[in-house]
Length: 197
Image: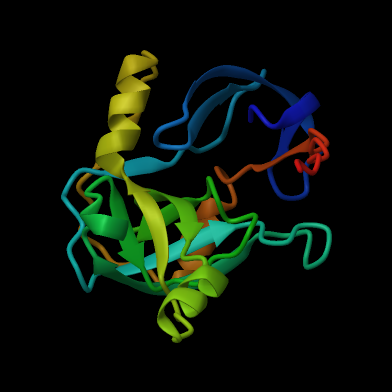
């Protein structure tokens, strides 16, 4: 959100955009708290039980918004590892496909509860140059521990869930429509680099 110029806008699918206000942010974990006027019919619940390697997950987001669909996309996969690059335990490694525009979107368990916030994908070009191999399905999400700490520090109440019922992916996506915002802003122009002799 620090790369934005002007208003930050957000909207649920099919609704008019509303102006959002940046309340707080956590640059280390790439999390931001945004405020909007009004109320919501539904909110996401954070899964109380820890996610495990091999558990099914669903990533919801708006990849390449403006180039692809204006609606959110749904991708499925599993938790590949309980840590990220260089064993960073703040992250989950997931196989659900993500692209630019998925960042900040919810990562949901088979119960439909939040188990992470989509953060990044492995840089395939850098990885290929370094190893000679092209990586596939290596993506990352911030775990709910960091998310809950951020919300607690921001004094934001949230709901937890111990739901055990597994939903179909279509049900998870339908439920996510009520709490997944498209957030957009104009990016700051990059400064031109000057050549040094």
